[in-house]
Image 1 (cartoon, helix red, strand yellow):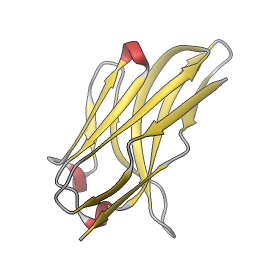
Image 2: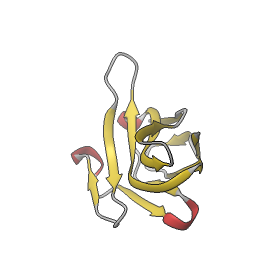
Image 3: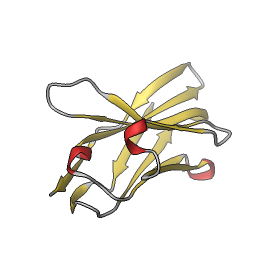
Image 4: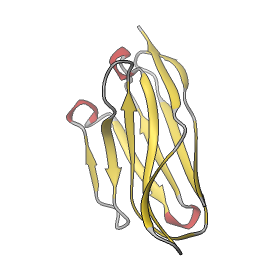
Length: 119
């Protein structure tokens, strides 16, 4: 069984910074891509940033130049450094990882962490 546990969300003023973390645990053989998504009420979950096992990254246009995704493969952890936050970044942020276990390859999600940016 695999678990993704997120931390680091909270309330911050516009222009501020937050750092999200997501640690994967369980019977993990390897982790492929890891990413962050966000979702606001009434809308679909959207990709924010993704990082491959080799370190290649991709970002949503709305966060380019402000957010940085990174990972520590030894700790099975992915991070999202969010700078110059805007009120429109307010959302629940979910961690996602494509994980190979002894049984199968699958997509796993964290429980979500609220990020609120006040104007």
